[in-house]
Amino acid sequence: MTQPLALVLYEKLLPGSRVVNLLQDLNYRVQSINDPGMLIKCAEQGKPMVVLADLEPSRNNICAIIGQLKENPATRHLPVIAFSGDTPSELKEAARSAGVTLLVTEAAVVGHLPQLLDQALQVE
Image 1 (cartoon, helix red, strand yellow):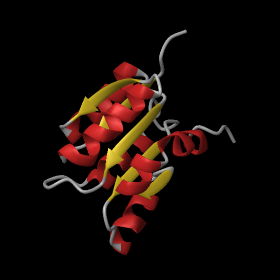
Image 2 (cartoon, helix red, strand yellow; image 1 turned 30 degrees about the vertical axis):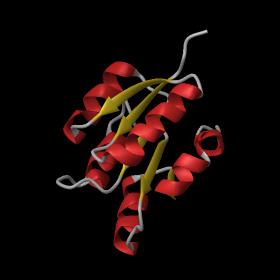
Image 3 (spheres, helix red, strand yellow; image 1 turned 90 degrees about the horizontal axis):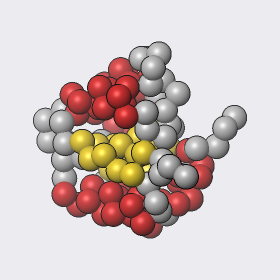
C-alpha cells in the first residue's frame, strides 16, 4: 500500500518539525514546504491527502494562500489543518474565510494529530 502524502507548510522550526515527525510516525510521506508560494504547485503535482499549515509565519499571509488553494479546481478538495500559537480572532476569521477545515493550537496539533487527521479526512 502506498503511503499517503501530507504537505506541511511552516517557517518556525517548532512545531513544524514535530508535526513532520509525527506524520512520519503515522506512516505518511511528508513534503515540507518553507516557501508559501510553492504550496499550490506542490499540491497540484504531489496529490497530497492533507495539508497542514502554520498560520504564523513572519512574512506571508498564509490565509490568502490557503484561499487560493481552495479556489483552485485541482486542489479545492484538500482538507487543510491550520495551527498557530495564541490565535487572534482576526486570524481565526481569516482562516475560516479562506476555507481551513480545522483550526487548532500548536499544542493540539502536536498532542492530538491522529484524531485531527481522522476528523479532517472524514468524507461528508
